[in-house]
Image (spheres, rainbow, N blue to C red):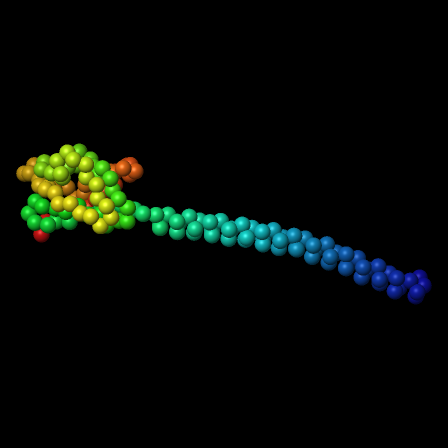
Length: 149
């Protein structure tokens, strides 16, 4: 072996190591790029979901509330931000006495209220909740009825 060949063999070994490091770095770069892409996609999906939730929260909504006024007199109020048109209550859940404007249409704009009569009997008490529907709302939603003091 000639001493002049030693630097050539050393250079070959160093270049081999450099090639190996380059290939390894390229693979790590690809993994890093894939991770960055997945992170960006996840961030976009999260932002889109947040924007949908904000848009849904900003939509006008009906929120019916029943309050007890006196004896068998109650008040139905729309505390929401949208109009509730053609409000009806499920007949199966109503107490024996229930009078809400007879058979006329009941529509409550945001903030409006209407008084109504509701009373139980010996065999059937006033229910703890009524189930209401209105135009655009199906199925019926529960409306809590407060207990008489």
